[in-house]
Image (cartoon, rainbow, N blue to C red; front, side, top):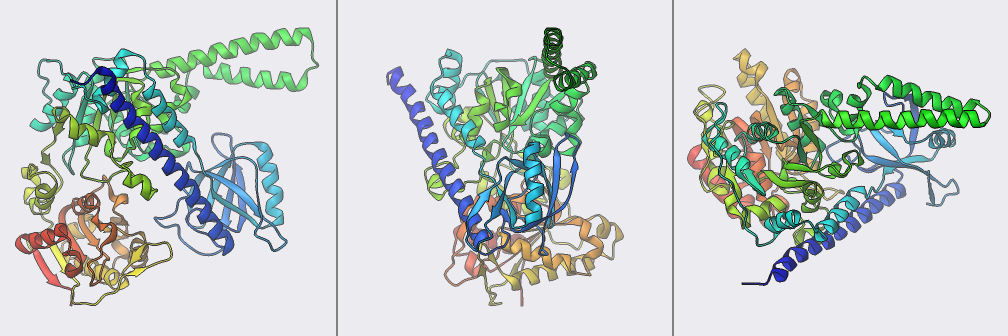
Length: 637
């Protein structure tokens, strides 16, 4: 048996490695952003992270009393899937020298994207001085805006890793050693809790969560009701604990589960940047609940009175005493309102990085739930885990991994998530949800066999579901004899114009066929997916200009595989793009992404691709054979 110090050293080494990988990722991120900026500046154009030159379109104050500039890029374009500007992103303004050199000067201060649409962007400023300076600079021209390197996320992750290394509490050290060390997890025995709206595997997962002393994992393959199961487990936990923390790696993911909890009547306080929170959740944000508190009008009046007193009165002992009393009352109200808002919540929700928000102070929770945990960096998870006695992971390590920028960090294992490590080392913690409610069984079965050891089954109500009796649920349109050409563009993404035109033609023909049944025509939803951003841009363009598709445009979504994570459509068409004699398929080798793509369809899946290129990889060879045996393969010619 290894001595205790040696066992602890294993977890410390693991955390040290995470620190090294995070540093690699940070350096790469900062360097890539600077290189993209210099490239845009050199060619006087925009790219995914820089617009130059820009002009002022208007200005106004938003609901948060921030001064907002509406800027515009002069050329005509549409913001595509590779655009890095998005609400909540930090940006900075810059001015280029007028003497012909490439010298630039940054405008001091930070700003934040409030909204982006096409070639217009609304940007909220952080202080009045920046407002005045920018308004002067817009008159002089040669002004641009770029994504700012924001190392806040990296700072939060690095601090969390250092704190995890330095833990002194026996309870927290024990939790750390269960998660990344050699300590085995423990479970209590509780009376069975059965929920009528859950199936057998879902009920077993909730039971396992309630019985776990340190950690439990809900493994939710596509369509198996992971969110439904998690919501039930969270609600049951709130009946046993005063308050629960729920996190996810992205704002979209945490907004989704927050909404599901609210639908069940759970009292939720959503912590985070209001610009990154969905409109449906705004009334449940900390800021809105703070402003809705009955004592807030008094606080607002006090703040205004203190400002007016500072500005208008001559200093005196009497004024100083009055100010001191007002400031004391203001502080009392601020503390009172804050505590009552926070205590009103059964569940506090935020992103993993948001769990370091100052509003949470030193708050500690009995249980932390992390949804979409397989898309979260381990370091980000630690930021939240340090606030809890136990942690519940939910996700699917056979779907999308975290996005890693640095190839070196990825090779070093940065994409290996904490949930994945627990699944591999502590299998007793894992509950697999085995019944899916999304896909026709023919669409489901290949994914089940390849990724889930054949353990998935289709619920009876979806097993044989099709759009129409004449419709086949599984089709591969083979372009092997068509001599299409893939193309590598300047952003190192790939496209295949002829394949894109073929796919849109297939979609148009299918829409024509469904027109004979008005119900199918009006209600059917379509997803067009490609692993490559350049192909997605091309497909969007072709779909957008099609007159045949115009009546059903509202039902068609075109996006990358990543953009379709967590979504589903009646009909899915996938453009595989790769077409070469070498069998080179690039990052199509990331089979988890392809698992996402082929499991988005409810009733029909159409794959468009070159079988000769793709089948040189065993996964795609098996997939092609599966479609031949269980669906329809037809030539593109």
